[in-house]
Length: 534
Image (cartoon, rainbow, N blue to C red; front, side, top):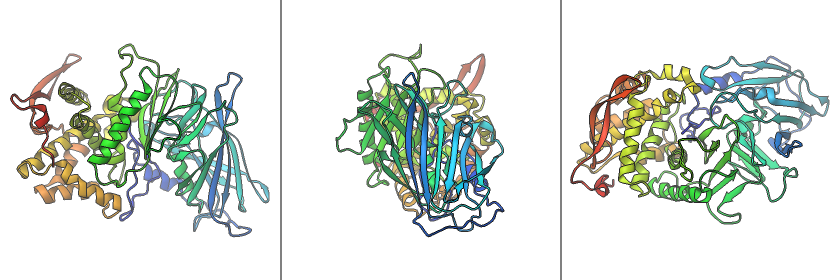
């Protein structure tokens, strides 16, 4: 269960909150640096043109019929943002532990009416923990529009550190990854609409060229860097449902997985429908796309969500896995990011909300929907609790967790678990304050609607005030103590429903003893009475 990321987000009050990729941290500061102006002569234009950024992607194959690169041909029209003095391009050097992305951009050619455009390059300061930083190309002379850009982005080689599947990797005769894993984009263009298209002539037919944004040729709203915030897949991919079926849920995969892909995607589609009904702040819920790839060599990736989509990237069957058992919890977690969303502000500093709320729903909603048995529900809660209370980082502040980043998954997931326990406890507090009539679901609904409509800038402070308005007390102090300062959190015994009670216990791990909580069934209360509907 890996997080979502959006390094381009600019948090503005009154603006509709975009879905963030939850692993991002401190990236607004990175992007402010990325967009600083250079002291270079003012750009001139031959004629006013409608601003636009148009790209065609050409996957190429080596002699072994394996994708070795994606060649990109692009045209930028219109001009630069107001106040910009020099044309700039950017690409990540590191993006969520994917290394050397900018180094794999080769054969770069940029031309305008005057011919070739030369650039100077500068890299941001490296960011600890595998978080993104960028390389910037600055034109050495004024450019005239249209500007044509072409380059070759080589695939991510095998090996390297673990992390989400943002790098472009070949698999099963195709290619997949995130736009941030290979794209070079204008960073200060006036364009607010991009067009993506594919040249699939290298592949045998039928083949697909599909992204988070749609199948085939698509338009992507926003500045050019918006194209980085999507999943990309091309080649002889399988799909669910079959091509031509009119549905809002689509899935594509490369490789033969150790489980039934169609059965797994049918389950995920059912959960999409359930979430669409359970939550009412996305009306209607947008189209959703799942991407899956099977890799032969590490790094394998895991599950990661972007807006309206997620990627599952994995390797061969592990020794401790059961053949035929799909990772349903991963599918549910990544899918839920569509509805839980995020707070404004630093993405890692607030991922107790984005990842914590998602993790809370990951454990509770499949049980409520009847897709998880009562025994599985209890076992899942106890695994989560054990993982949280027995990690050395259970009482670490978020500042220390952020430094570790992707170097240790146990530490990185503490905000997920801590956040899930906080939201379970909040549900219990809300129900107890309303004699069981109003829980977390009812409390969240108007808040998420207001966030979606852009009527509220949902910061940590705003969230805490909303809770305090209902329950009294100083919620901000609790939130800061638990999620910022790292106080080990023990939720109320009735946090996960009437049919389960939490008890203090002592866990042992690697010869050490840890105080924690476990969850046990309540006698004489049937599982179907566990939750009272709001």
